[in-house]
Structure formats: structure tokens, C-alpha cells
Amino acid sequence: MSNKYTKAVWTFVVAGATLAALWFGHAATERYYLQQLASQNQGTLGLVASGLQGSLLRYEPLTSLLADKTDVKLLLANPTEQNRVTTVSEQFRSIVQDIDASDIYVMNSSGVTLAASNHEEETSFVGRNFNFRPYFQKAVKGSAARYFALGTTSLKRGYYFASPVLSGASVIGVVVIKIGVEDIENTWRGPSTEIIVADTDGIIFMASRNEWLFKSLEPLSDRAVASIKASKRYPIDKLSELKNQNRSSGITGSPFTSVELAEGRETYLTNSRFMPDAGWTLHVMAPKALATGRTLTAMVVATLALLLIVLIVVYILQRRARLVRDIAAGARAQEQLELSVAERTNDLNLANENLTREVAERRLTEQRLISTQSELVQAGKLAVLGQMSAALSHELNQPLTAIKSYADNARAYLQRNKTEQASQNIEHISEMADRMAELGSHLRNFARKPKQAFDEIRLGDVVEGVKNIIGPRLKSEKAELNLGDFDDQLIVRAGRYRLQQVLLNLINNALDAMSNRENPVVSISSEVRGDEVAICVRDQGPGLDRDVSEQMFDPFFTTKGVNDGLGLGLSISYNIIQDFGGAIAAENHPDGGVVFTVSLKSASPVEEAAE
Ligand code: ADP
Image (cartoon, rainbow, N blue to C red; front, side, top):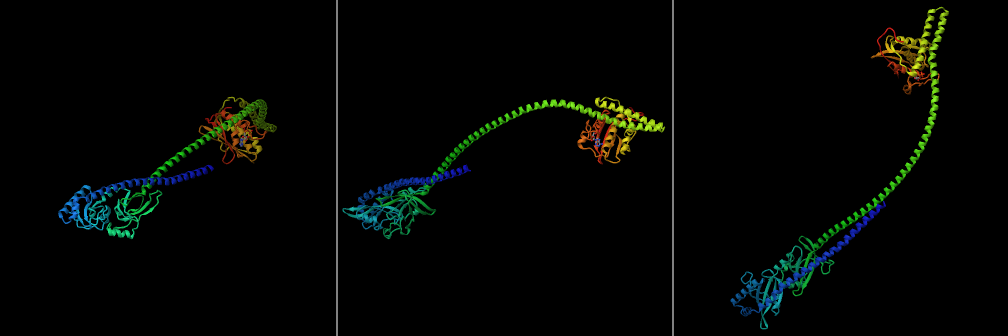
């Protein structure tokens, strides 16, 4: 914020200083160029004045020489002699050509022209009287005269030199040389600077601009107008004011003159010089625009130079500021780097300490784990032993219960002498004993996984055995086995008692799942699927939770109470089916309950099943 403020202040200061410098510089530069213009004017003045002086002085002595000529004097003595008139006139004509004058003529003492260089021209002066001209009036009185006027006959401006022709002490005539001024004026015409010559009344009679001729620089007095009229010096109707306005330019002796031109008002820087011999004032006027233009050019150059300097200074300052900023940023970055290095070193040290501590802790934990593990192994061994004995008692309990009930029945039949029924029951008892022996071997199987032979067995034989074993439980729980969709004749490759054990386990689990229901029904169905036979055991229990279905085939996984389940049934079943080269899977039935599907390899029907 403050940086911005300082920048703005600096910008204002620099801009202000630049403007002030340009303002003062402009005034000084303009003054300088005006001064230069004034000295140029002075130079021009000097040249013009000496040029004029030179061309005028050339003719003055010539007039007195002509006035001394014998022919002239003789003519004045005998004015009627025509051949003298012609002779003198011819002489004058040849001199006019030699000296590049306008006219030469001689007048008698009354002002009548006797001979003239233009005697053969239409505008011949011969016979004309010019006694009104002041140069005549002065010369007739005995002194040489000079005069500027517009020719009354030729209507050409000219400068007149007059000398008296003396006969003894008296003046008998006047010789006049008139020279034109246009040639001189032509040398003045330039592209810009104007030159004018004004007489004592301020009337311009020579000028580089034609339209300024006969204009007066000041208002004319009545006396002056009367004298001009009398001498017929200038055409009265052409006289008017130039309406010039003078004001100071700040340069001494060089005022500004502003004049209304056809193309608009123009301001000149004027320098003037009075020529005392002729009574004339010379004015050299240079357009002020020359100085203004040069000033402008100089100012543009100066402004550009100043801008360049300002730009260079700004560039240097910015570079410096950037350098300072870069150095500061570098220092900051260095500081930051050092700080972050220190922080990281600190972090590393901390991490190192933590690691060392953690390693020590881990070592300690490891040692503890090793000792805990050995304790656990010991405890695990005991637990497995406990579970195994519980499982054994569970698995043996059911056939034992069945044997008990068959034995009771056999005794009752024997008491009633129904030996056939009694022997049937004893047969059942024998089967149960076989089954228990089989169970023992299963448990061994579970531990050692022995390879046992399996054969082609009829599903009907398997289910018959299952019904015998599960019958008492069904009876006591008022449960029912639904074998509506069960095909007795299908033959699979398996072990008879082991498949019975699997189905019994599935039926027992189904009955357990429906323990809250009255009259629970376990449906057993079978069907051929390709080269396999699928046996499905379905209940109407609560179904399987996701986490249960994921773990239920694991050994010792059970959701039942300690005395109700060991979690070995499904695990053993799984192993048995695997042994048969089949598969066992469970899924929730869409109408509720669980369906266990046992898939076994199908075989062609045989008379007697193995085992
Ligand atoms: P146990 O019957 O001793 O618990 P199992 O291996 O036979 O061991 O069964 C494991 C678990 O699988 C059971 O505890 C029970 O949670 C679940 N399970 C088995 N069959 C069913 C079923 N028909 N309905 C619901 N859950 C079942």
C-alpha cells in the first residue's frame, strides 16, 4: 500500500518536474530562436541597406557630370534649335542604356522638359512641365536633389536625381536621372522574410509584397496628404493604411508586427533601420512562425530526449528494485531452507527416537508374544481336547439314544413273544453299532484324512438308514421328513455311511434351525444335473446370516450353545463330500429357510451298493 503511494507520489513529482522543465525550456527556447531570428533580420537589414545605398550613390555624381555638359548648356541657351534637342536626347538615350537607368532628361528653369532619353517614345517627356516635383524645385534653387515618386507619365515608381545646370552663378536648367526600383525589389522576394522601405510619412514605396505598396504604416496627417497631392508623388486613390499592429516580442529593437494578409493574419518579428541620407526607414520582417516552428522541433526533440532519460532512469530504478527484491527473496528462501532443514532434522531426530523406542517396544512385545504363544498353545491343546471329547459324546449320543430305544422295544417285543419284531429291533441295534464304529473311523478320518473306498450307491438305501436314525428325534419333536421330490433310484458315487452321516448332520441342523416352530418339516429332494446328482435339504428356519454363511464350513464354528453344538458337523460333511469328489453349498431359499445342496457324481444303477 505504502509502496504504491510512494510510487504515485514519485510519478507526480517526475511528471511535474518534466512539465515545468518543458514549460521553462519552451519559453527560453522560443526566446533563443526569436533572438536568432532578430540577428538574421539585422544581417538582412545591413545587406539591403548597403545594397540600396550603393545603387543610389552610383547615380548622384553622374547627374552633376551631365549638368556640366556643354551640349546641355547650349541647348538650354538655345532651346528652339531642334537638332540640339535631338542630339542631347540621343546622348541621353545611349547613357540610359549604358548605366541601366530609367530616364534622363533636362528641363529649363521653368520646369519644361527640353530633351529626354525617351524623346522618341509615346510617353516622351519632351515639352512636359515637371515644376511641381520637389526635386525640380530644390535643384532650380541651385542644389542637388533626390526624390522618390511614381512617374506621372510612365506610372512607374522611380528614384529621381536632379542637378542644377549653372551658367555663371544663375541656374538655367535642371538635369534629372530617373532610375527604376523594381529590379532592386525583385532581389528581395524570398520565401518568407519580407522587406519594405517607407518614407518619412511612413508610406511604403518599396516592398517585397506588391500589395503593400503605397500603404502607410501610420495614419497620414492632412498636411502629408496635401503635400503628396501637390507633388503628385503617389496616386492619392491608392493610399491606405496597412493596419499593422506592433507589440513587444521581448527582444529589444525587434517588436512583433502583425499584419492582415489575404491568407490570414501573420505575425512578423520586425527589425528596422533609418537611412538618414535618404530619409527612409528599412523594415525587415521575418515570420514569427519560423521561430515557433524551430522551437516546436527543439521541444519535440527535448521532450523525446527527456522521455528517453526518464525511461532509462525508470528502467535502472526498476532493475535496481528487482535486484534488491531478488536478493531479499534469495535471503528469505535461504532462511526458509535453513529453517525447513532444521525442522526436518528435528523431525528426523524425533522419528529416529520414536523408531528406537518402537523397536525396543516391539522386541519386548515379541518376547511377551513368544511366552504368551507357548501358553496359548498349551491352552489351545486343552481346549481342542475338550471340544473333541464333547464332539465325540455328541456324535455317539444319537446312536446310543437310538440303541437304547431299540433295545427297550426289543425287550418289550420279546416279553410279548414277538420275536420277529424283536429281531428287527436288534438288527437296528446292530446297525447302530456299525454306525458308531463308523463314527469312530470318521473322527480318525477327520484327524488323518484317510483314503477310504467309495462305490456306487442307491440314494434310497442311504435315506432308509437316515430315517432309522433320525426317526426318534422326529417323533419327539413332531417333525416330518418330506421326501416328495426324492428319487430313491438315483445312484451316486459315494460311501454309504459317510453320505448318511452328511445327510443326518444336515437334517439335524435343519431341525435345530426350526426348533421354535411347531411341526417343522425338512424337505429332501434329488435331481440329476448333467452328470451329477444334486441332493437338496431344505428347512423353514431363519436362514443364514452373511457372516455365518462365510464361516460355517470352518471346524469349530458354531452359533449354538456350548452343549448344543461343536461346529464340527458341516466341517466334517464338507471333508466327506470333498473325498467323494463332490461339492456342498448352502444358500437362503427365496421363500425362507436354507437349502443345502450336495452334488455328487452320478453312476449307473447297480444291484448292491458298497459299504
Ligand atoms: P453345529 O451344528 O454343532 O453348530 P455345524 O458345523 O453343523 O455345527 O454348523 C455350523 C453352524 O452353521 C451352526 O452353528 C449354524 O449356525 C449354522 N447352520 C447350519 N445349518 C443351518 C441351518 N439349516 N439353518 C441355519 N443355520 C445353520
